[in-house]
Length: 280
Image 1 (cartoon, rainbow, N blue to C red):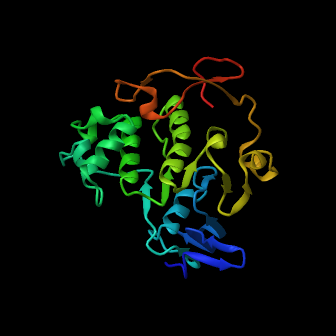
Image 2 (tube, one colour):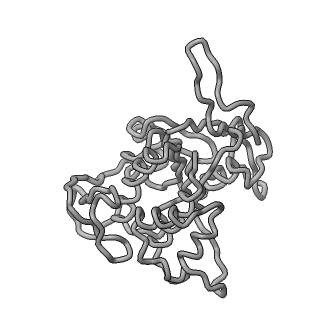
């Protein structure tokens, strides 16, 4: 996969070419069409979210875009020497292999000690340094995988269901962190999510997938699109947000950090019907 150039000259100046462009992708697996005429562009600095029901082809599309799976037809153009940080939906590790969090992060290509330390502190996982990767909670493991992806200094950060196994509060905190990481690294973000309403504030563009592109655009417009409503229906009790600032934050590993270390506002999230313990 390659792109012919990293930028296109025009009379008005230089316009950056997409980091990745997919053209008319089609793929069938076990005689079932899972991707049908998919076209999209990932522009520098943009946050794009793929949403859709289970089994609709979101993760498969990610794998095709990254060159891990070959489409039956169509093509993927990728900017030359594109640095990609990939956080997979699952990463199977042999439980017989002793591996600490610190050791796992040191396996990242080109990772340096100061960079590892920075992202451990930035993501609130420094206290997990000597813990076995096999004993982490879902939220802890997702933060470790995110740190590994960030160690690659990506121009494109790819997050496949980054909140899998994370509680609702942890999901909201991670989605709040993503735009901050985009701004800090100057990268684009492509992520997969199952819930548009959780990612609305964290994304520039939504692509609703169900084997084909049902609809796409700004999250506000997609949430009202008939194709989206047919798949997901109307949300009766959307999550309401109100934000206040603390001088500290409670990290996922149990210790307390100054709020500016994590650069994440502490948010309270409530359902409008105020039923305790319900998830949306």
